[in-house]
Image 1 (cartoon, rainbow, N blue to C red):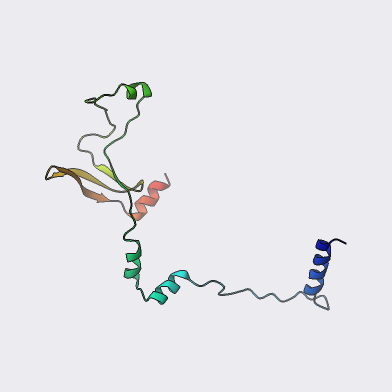
Image 2: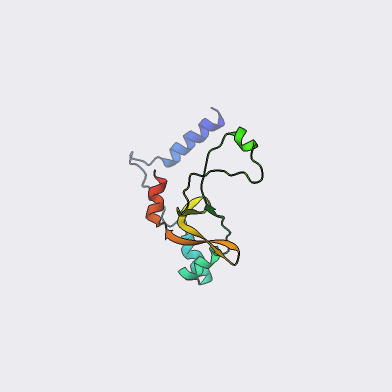
Length: 134
């Protein structure tokens, strides 16, 4: 008999209970500590202070003016002063994306010769989920 077969036979013999009764198995409980509670309790942080841990994480904000599809032939012909027509209409709200996810819509503003965006509509979490399912 090879080593694996001998080990399996030995394992079966050690698990078997005289009289043919199945061995009692008790499920393991509390094997893993709740990470969130452990960190909060160890450091003494509340929920508001736990939020402070993520406040310095950088995200990319994009304001989308519009989109278009263009053939490579036409793309290569673009030069300084060329006009590219976009699908968005003038005066239409622009999409504000955070890491590629739509979070708001707004309108362009100019303050001291710098462009900005005034948020006019914040997308609710429920609306974001609904848009993802489309």
